[in-house]
Image (cartoon, rainbow, N blue to C red; front, side, top):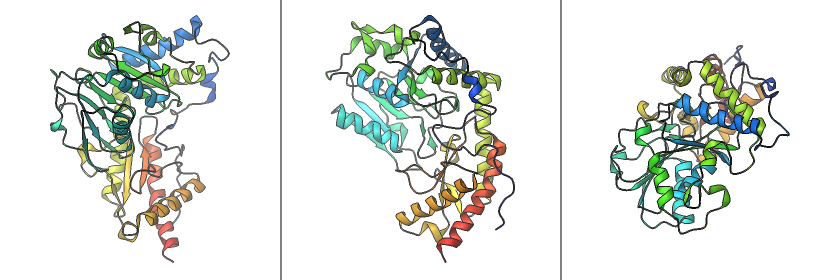
Amino acid sequence: MERPQRRPRNPCFSSGPTAKRPGWSVEVLKDALVGRSHRSAPARARLREVIERSRALLRMPEDWRLGIMPASDTGAFEAAMWSLLGARGVDVIAFESFGQGWLVDITKQLRLEDVRAFTAPYGELPDLSQVDPARDVVFCWNGTTSGVWVPDGGWIAPDRQGLVLCDATSAVFAVPLPWDRLDVVTWSWQKVPGGEAQHGMLALSPRAVERLESWSPPWPLPKIFRLTRGGKIDEGIFRGDTINTPSMLAVEDALDGLRWIESIGGLEGAIARSRANLRVIEEWVARTPWVDFLARRPEIRSSTSICLSIVDPRVAERPQDGQHAFVRAMTARLEEEGVAYDIAGYRDAPPGLRIWGGATVETADIEALLPWLDWAFEETLAETIR
């Protein structure tokens, strides 16, 4: 097969940190408040701006609280679990590595006894109708490592008694979240907005705040997880008074990403760009015999973390180590050509490819990438069957 001539203008297809927005340069950071205290009035104003722009773009209800947390989405979600769980039984939905991680934390670290796990293999969703509205629920909206997402929130009871904790890190700005069906939502800046890693966002419904103020977990809470002070919610966290010192460079970059989302039509514009990326890959997969989606059902197929399996029997019938080796060789070839960086599947996932399709990725770059995938597959196959 001939080497393609057209190359992606931006070869960054990593699932986190993700590609910067089109036109980004370090010049956007020139006004960052480096060297200033994050408690100074100008820095607090920047932090509040991140909160308020995020709230407005996501159409979050006015009575929800939104704050900036340390340690990315992981820190935000851990803070929620450690602070809120234990008052009721918990249903945990796990269909990829991060959901499995929350299940392990709940059973092995918090050591909750009344836990029900609803699991599914990579590429599938468990039966969500089994969830009990009287119990708390923990789930990932989008399985970043499996390319599977929850298609909607219709399975969540609006009159539930338990809280719904949603890790939405690679779904926020890619799906319209049903805020009335959720109580805790977390995400990070390093996914759809194309920001830098390190910081997370924590959104709490009034029901979640009520739990915080009426429930005291029996375990000690690390400082970076503490959301209350004197038995009441720490309102400062939700006004930009972060628990630990934030990077003002990352804050400036986050603001740039949020302003860019506003410029492309807000939430609808960001969703449309991601869906367009998925459509291009769907059309290519439909005509390409060597590849298929890890998520076989279209309705559960993510438009951000797009995970692909190599189904050609000359590769798929190899032992798993051999399949992983093939993927490593194929992706290394693409990196050497400078056309695609960091697109191997997640280390715990089945062997395959993972292409980020969030809003910061140009559809034209996806279109330019696909012939290179065909070329790299054929070249790697020829090399490994000599």
